[in-house]
Image (cartoon, rainbow, N blue to C red; front, side, top):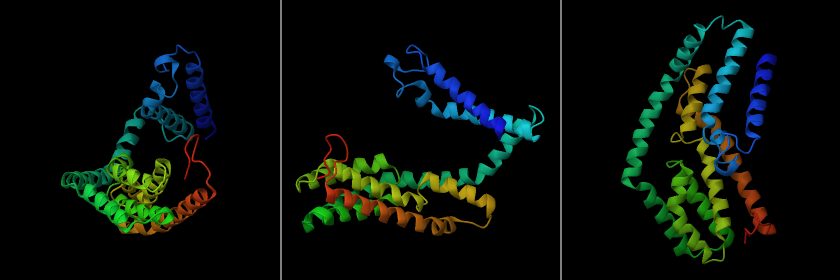
Length: 244
């Protein structure tokens, strides 16, 4: 662990030092760090880092005695990922049909029309949007896709009620994040299920959902109460972004 930690620090220091010059190839256009190849290609950087750490740790611990052992470990990792890949295939087919049928658009528009017809205002409107988006998120876990569907309806509707778009997006982000932990439609849910099955072979979707449900509900209640407190106090959500 000490040797792996040392390699991690050296690797991190090398990246930082290489990015210090404004003309560094690791920087983006105009010397940008945010739009640099390091951040846009972070998967490659992390892949190289984990390969180094794994090799150093294996050599120090004696589990990797030569270069021939590394492909064997990589193959073993792919064998463990096989059940997850099968689940990914099945879920991707469902999501494709879900998008093709337009069910997400129907749910979003019908729910928004219902809130508008009821004429609710303020905290009640927030609660309605929270419920609608939370339910939709169980089937459509892509935050950007769902926002593209509901924002043209929710944002103008609440602006007519003197609610700024920033507040609408804040309550939406709460609904968009909390139920990702319990829906099988989330790629991360399937990934977590694969890790869980390493230690409990009999675990299935219901097992993981029952374990994550208390966490999901706790996050939903906590974030909602925090937002209502924030809104009641009138604290801005950011520079030039009033909450009400």
